[in-house]
Image 1 (tube, rainbow, N blue to C red):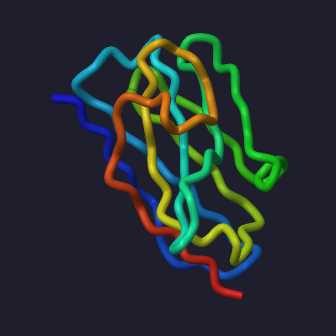
Image 2 (tube, one colour):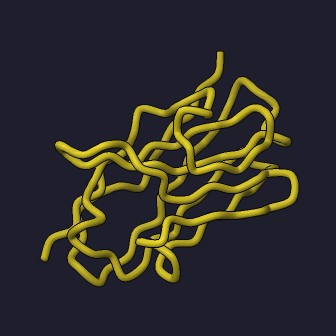
Length: 124
């Protein structure tokens, strides 16, 4: 059974940092692509960042460039999202997703497996 389990969310003040983790099981981690997406109340799901587990190619949404860093530990089958200088507009449920063809894309519809999400709340 494929499982993606996110952790690390929480409440933080603006300017603070959080690191999200996503632990994968039930599939061969490499060569999947992994992505982080978020959805705020009343808004559409949006891509935050993605990474190829094979060559570590990454991509970021413009809104998080320079503040967020995605990485993987293939041995642990885990993907991370380091979030620095958080802003209130980063408040959302953050989801981890896996794409089986290894295409690091910000298009959420192309991902095959999803976690249940972790809440990130940034207070002003």
